Image (tube, rainbow, N blue to C red; front, side, top):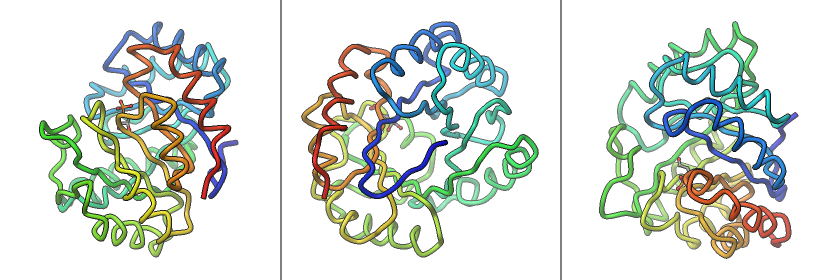
Length: 243
Ligand code: 1GP
């Protein structure tokens, strides 16, 4: 069972079904489990369809025993063979489609298929001059890396709404990750577990985010680029001291 808790340091591996064939995803899943990752997120902003998501999860499950969490882009790409889903409010999107409509379209599927929803306050933090993919796909009220007050307000809202986690995401392959100071500001404001992802490609960066108050680190692109490096990141997370 996958349980997030404040102070419980974890690592999640993001596998994007759009980036490799399902068979290759299975090979990567086996590697990340060996390195000590705690779960596999399946998704991204460009997952083509439900069938691709299903086949990717199928191969992941053949190759490892880690829990699989859907990281959804829309209701059309949910797959019945996942264990969990980050059931999201995109906190800084003004678009009803991403606040409510996709969630409503997906809710009955999640229930029917017995996927466990993890109510998630998801925030996109803009740290790059060139927009990341998520920034091009979803209408956003921009939260820049120094907009601590906005980030804190969104996170506190998520906590008051009863969401189980806050996920601060700089998007895939950003120029820089969510700044330490912003992670710290949000950490001080809420009690719920804090997930941080986007551009965390070294052990030092992972350690810094944990030291600033992140509980869970997400790694995506690096798994496709240099999966061996992941072992250092996971070791750093597990040995880092948190606040
Ligand atoms: C993106 O947080 C994830 O939504 C992962 O980002 O691909 O940069 O690791 P990276």
